[in-house]
Image (cartoon, rainbow, N blue to C red; front, side):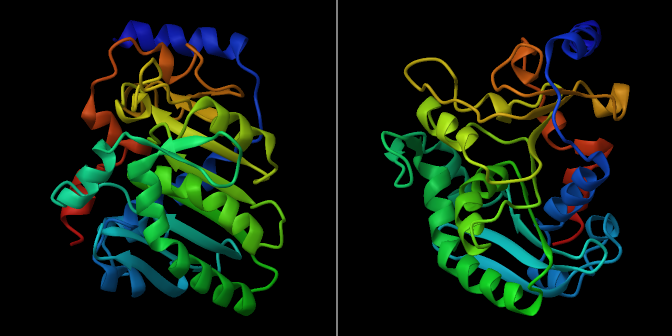
Amino acid sequence: MKLQLLLLVCLSFAACQSFTYTQSLAQDLAGFSLASYCNPKSIEQWNCGCACDKNPQGLRNVTILFNSTLQASGYLGYSTHHDAIVVVFRGTVPWLIENWIADLNTFKTQYPLCQNCYVHQGFYNQFKQLKSQLVTSFTSLRQLYPNAKVFVTGHSLGAAMSAHSIPVIYQLNGNKPIDAFYNYGCPRVGDQTYANWFNSQNFALEYGRINNAADPVPHLPPLLYPFSFFHYNHEIFYPSFVLFGNQHNQCQNAETIFGADGVIIAANVLDHLTYFGWDWSGSILTCQ
């Protein structure tokens, strides 16, 4: 596995086209994503232990997004450090059956924003439960901070929801591109028609799907028939935060063997929980 990952690194630099990627910002947004798993009160007070320590400056005017029926969750607030409104969606919580049901609901549903586009029903349902809260909260923050940048992020299931939020936030932002959109361990959100549509839009000034080594989640739902799901563009692939640190490659196009698709056996759940070399599971368990 180590040799395979090293070969991927070497080959990909020659094979992939680059795009704008600010690693320090992506790491900060990963910290905000990690904090989304913590107790809501501790997020509001920015006192959630190791997760909040990733962004010690914290956030102001934090609003929690939550739906009890599907246990969908997220938050948003204003970062003085970045002068940005930060929108974050929480991923799958292992002990919440509603989150697992959403993950496993791989039926496709028609997507209303583009013709003949179909998306993962479970992920889309989760986002729809938070949409009205997102609209209200983002509008309020935009009134308070009219000139602030806009960042969007999420991990796992939260990564899928973050993708669904982008067209909505783009519209709320006056149809102006979002400043940065990075997510981590994102599953495939929709079919190829949806991915092509997403790629054709000018939703964000910089964005990317960040994948770690043999994380299985970016390989789900499967690419092949009868599932036929497809990623949108801009992959940032880290062969292993543990082995190679921040060494990575960027691929403009989705579904390339020089990214996560090149990992033959993508079955290491720990890789889903060690983005940027952090112990996500330990941090999550200690901030409840």
